[in-house]
Image (cartoon, rainbow, N blue to C red; front, side, top):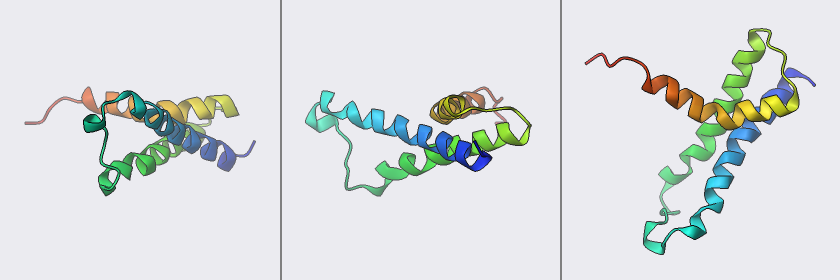
Length: 93
């Protein structure tokens, strides 16, 4: 597989995670469900695939061999990995 294909698979992994979150919405009470008319709700549908693609790109640029299942896993876990990394940074103020 080419690097572009692996990056696209990683982006799809980030998008699939958002779809799984969407499948959980019927379990919520109506008043707890998000406002789908608010554009802010849709930001993770753009950001998570971008984060997944970016992380796969970083792996590939460091000469790490990826196969398609690993690229999908990297894309799906990228938002959580990056959030964890940021939360462990020391506070400057």
